[in-house]
Image 1 (cartoon, rainbow, N blue to C red):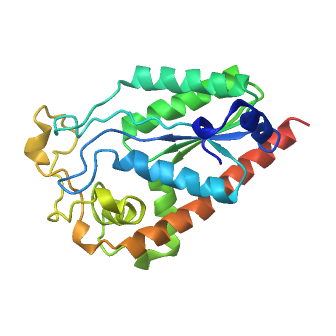
Image 2: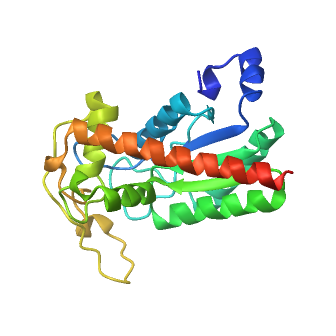
Length: 247
């Protein structure tokens, strides 16, 4: 078992002898069109973390469902933290992971919003400064996906695909098929450049950014497989760096 919450106290102590790396999946609770669950971002990050745990000795911490959501706040079902709250929460968790003997923290975010990622990066930097024996990596799954698609452009048909589109629909078909309610029409948001707007649904009524119709479960499975391989390389590099710094 690699899920922290499933271990007994003796099992936790035994696991800690094998690995000092903990993964923290972070997502958001936000709309993902009419066909995908509100927890899509978290389900993606958590599925990836668990797959990594099956191939590499890491402990998967209980996930954070909540993140900072800006452009989807007016859509039904979206619940957003403020940036200060997310930073404080991640810093407190990092301190506790360190107190429990972990020296590497990998934050895996399935939500890629700019303000959300800024909060996670700032929390990670604060932990580096405060905890000299802790190594930190902050991984935006969208960045992993971009790297994968540069090497495998045939994986996604929809150019510019993003939120609740082809990729996320494929991922949910692979990871949580029972929660996928069919598909949704192709849609692209029309927010004005530079201008902040109050009525966000006016510019993005359906909450889809891309074309979900192109998605398949096999496609989602392949994306998850490649993401797992790439994330394991990131973790191994962090662990190697920390070993060298502690010599």
